[in-house]
Length: 120
Image 1 (cartoon, rainbow, N blue to C red):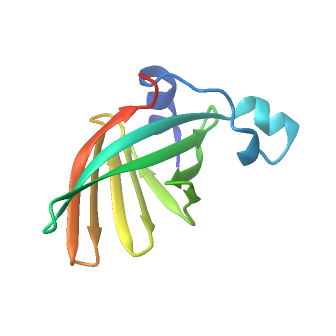
Image 2 (image 1 turned 180 degrees about the vertical axis):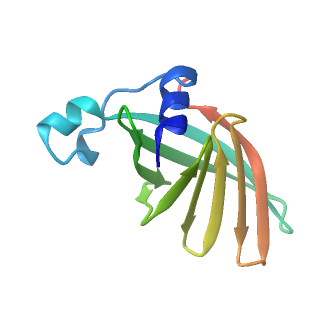
Image 3 (image 1 turned 90 degrees about the horizontal axis):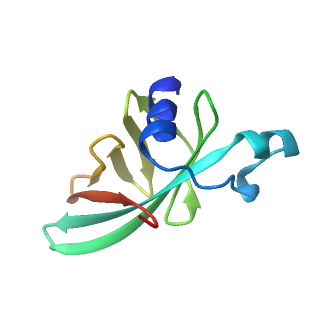
């Protein structure tokens, strides 16, 4: 969880104020920022569209927390501009540069969709 994604988030996506609920200390609150993405994912084979809200908290050097649909994920990894995580048996890949969502739900359903920064 290193600098490429944090740098992209700082440079390419507008930074929203520090999320107080995510902060562990007052000093950390001042140094933490977040980006909120709304992703429209189309799930197949049902052909249903779900809007997923992704909150990515980061400091100057790394991503510090990820939250999807109001639920904080247990773990995540970052590779360049790609964010990998899982939530409720759904493996999720978010490309922050291309603003693209992709997921697989245990081979039973797959989704793809576009993401947009909230409020813009």
